[in-house]
Structure formats: structure tokens, C-alpha cells
Length: 112
Image (cartoon, rainbow, N blue to C red; front, top):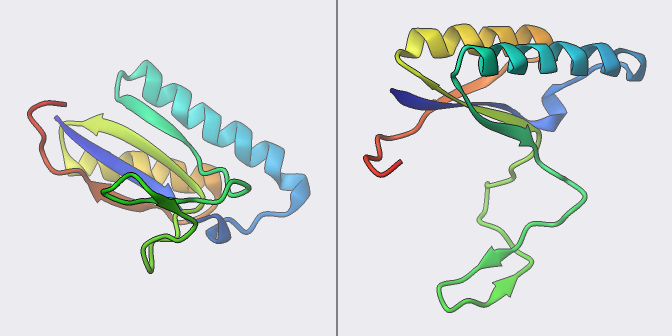
């Protein structure tokens, strides 16, 4: 089985404040479906209130990040047998979150 990353940047979710509870409930329902189906690996939202750091090979840390690597928003990792099934789950999340989702495939790692 292959692991897939389904994600969206926070600025993609344009939802009125009064709609947020319904969107959160819908997204949680999809996650519960994924858990019940046995395909859920991990998910969550990036805490944008905590600044990222870059940890170098020598162990030092700095408040910079790689150019273009702004990671924001929410993500879900699912383990599925086919890309078509991953697309179907991405569609469910897109409907629930009311915004487009990016779908990426992890390379095979025999140790995971």
C-alpha cells in the first residue's frame, strides 16, 4: 500500500467565521470515515503561531527556513492501495473543507 499526503494551505480555505464549525464537523466526519476504513495514518493542522526553525547538520538552529517551503494549513496522510482511491478521499476532504486539496504520493520505504 502507498501513503498519500492530502493537504491545503491555510489561505485556500476561504470560509466565513460562522461557517467554521460546520466545516470542522464535516472534516472530522471524513477523518472518522478514514479511521473506520483503516486507511488513516496521521493528520492535523500546522500551528502557525509557532515559528519554524531550520536545524543544520551540526545541530545548530536558526529562525530561517528553506526558500519556498512555507508549510501552512492542514494535512492528512492516508495509506491506500491505489491513486484512484486517494483521489476519492481527496475529493471527500475538498468537499468537507470547502477548498481544493493537493494530493501527493510518498515514495516507497520498506522500513515504514
